[in-house]
Length: 316
Image 1: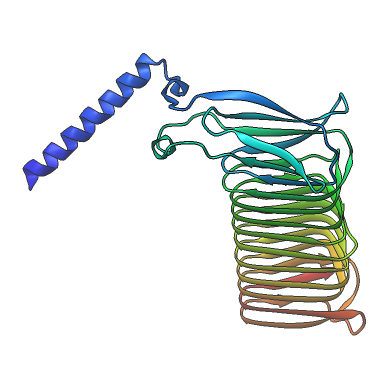
Image 2: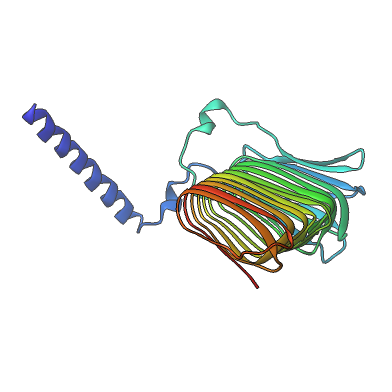
């Protein structure tokens, strides 16, 4: 057994030396190991369209204003895996064309493929994006009727407003929303952070994060619901006209200058602290923890319960 261990360690050391020597020969430029050949192709779109649908795999997706007033799609792509760009029934569709043989699926790739969509108008109907691992960036230059994004391992940044609503569902990745107006907003992530700042929502906001921190700042909406398993929730200047409902298994909930007509908070393990803007009738319950809330008999209902954690709320 001892000889086997010594042999295994020796093999690992020899492998490490070979890897280091190879990297040194390439001057640590790992792009030289890239087994795929990439090219930049530009697709010109002559037809008019109202909606946009993008299907991506590993590509990063960007949207930019077209300075020349013409719609073009610029793709940094593999030579054996190009993209189809077409307009059908008023919808601009962008999707990969899989022409690779099975053995091209295996290799070492260092360059990130990209799709950049240059749009001549600022207002469109529906934006729908399906992606696996590629990141997305939607700037404030555009407004849509609705935005729907589904991804696996992707970071999504959205500065664009949507009249009807914004719906983003990500498995592993962060969601960042900044300075938008929306009819409603639905953000979901399994493992990842959610950050929403400067949002005006005419309807409801729903946020679900299984494992990840959620930070909400300067949010105005009708109702706000946040559910999560593990992760802290911070609400800074978040105001809901009707109800603010929060459920957490493990995680702290912190209020700062936030409020709603009615507030409901339930946590398993975590503190609920901070300050509200208006008086509330507090109903609190904790198995292990301290409770410090104002003894008010006027205002809306504020119900807070936690199994293990402190409850400390002030009214300013």
